[in-house]
Length: 152
Image (tube, rainbow, N blue to C red; front, side, top):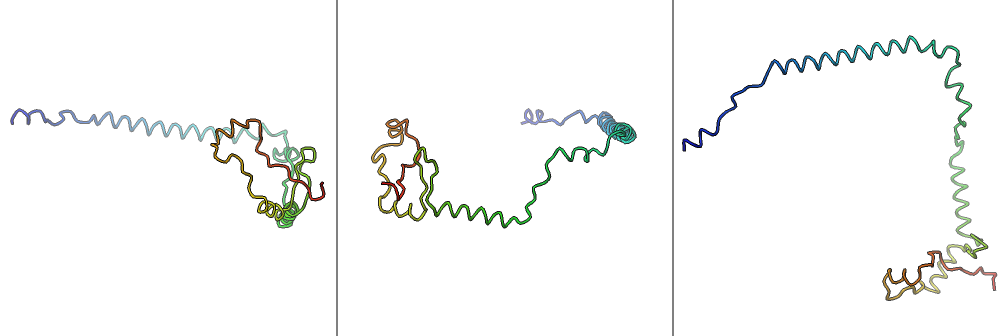
């Protein structure tokens, strides 16, 4: 039992207190030096800036013509109402999205009726997405062409 107690000994050397005070002193001294350097730079720049910009007009005033004026909305609600009216007219009217490609726009209510009448297309029943992709690699995800009501 005495052999194990001899192995647990306390630390014989204490902290080097003079070195710690020396490090703290140099840290405080460096902070003071940095502070004095920054104060000196600020005074130097404050004294020499007017001589550098003396021949120039006020810098923001010379650059004011380079930037466009702010685009302020006088009545932001009016433009929002115009946007919503345009969206509503697109949703409730027939029209061409791309006449050359044969893509038309139908009213949303009519599109829902057609979907209920015809049902969803039975694409790939019993097939995995990978087999569908391999079977039709050139096919795009665009919707099928809908005929306009006045087309034969």
